[in-house]
Length: 123
Image (cartoon, rainbow, N blue to C red; front, side, top):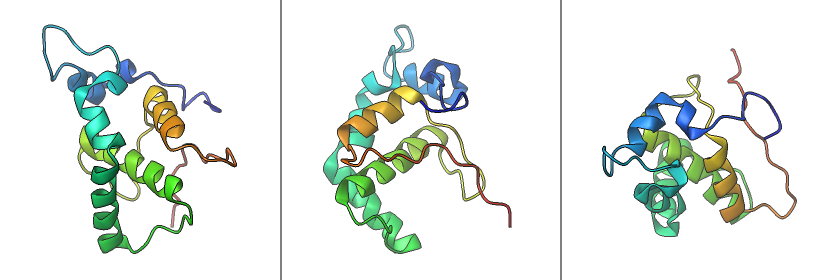
């Protein structure tokens, strides 16, 4: 990851540690990307399409012209919704680098231009 702040393991995030123990509390999943829910919630094309339609209904169309960017953006939103519930416009969290890398690999950008974590603007 390009910045120190974005270099975070899923095991360093309290909320995600709870998710890792969900399938079997006695044997936690080693990484959020190996959790059985991750592929369903964040990688399943039809789940992402439905989540995108929900996003579009609330906020209007996402401005990215290319589908893989829409899928990746929606997958990031799905991951944060799944783990943290609702965050909001000014309440943001850094996603674990393992999940970000998996989503970038799955929905790769041919131009290889990724934004990374951004703080919200202060109005």
